[in-house]
Image (cartoon, rainbow, N blue to C red; front, side, top):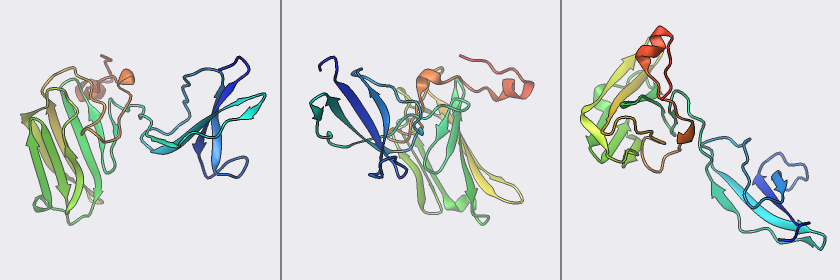
Length: 197
């Protein structure tokens, strides 16, 4: 790349300046760019090309990427659930289920290297847990949480390897940036002391 050559990175967007459905998210000479204004966990299309005094190269083949989420209480969001993590477990919450949901509508399978949850014949997640040593099946349980307005499911999933930071619940689901994870401790939160590990 010549000193006067720049790279232009664009994201597909419905709101573009030039009306072609793309907006520029980076323009510069660096071979690697960090773009911070992207929504985590949301798939998007990107394209790049070089621009210099001779003109512009063709756009490269579009690439679909899913930026990592910023963790909230150590966790994030899946397609149908929210999750947090402490140093020893995950709490997974499936909100806003139909009021008629009962335990008979829930199928939960938990093995050391496989977890699956189906509610009302809809797969919430299914696959290999993110943790390198799997889950503690003897420390994993679920319950229906009922309020006057809604029904939700709360799962507690024990980590086999304490202090391991999980990027997602099941491999292939949207990930959080584990460099930014601090473990959430419900006991400390209740007392107002939130430790960071």
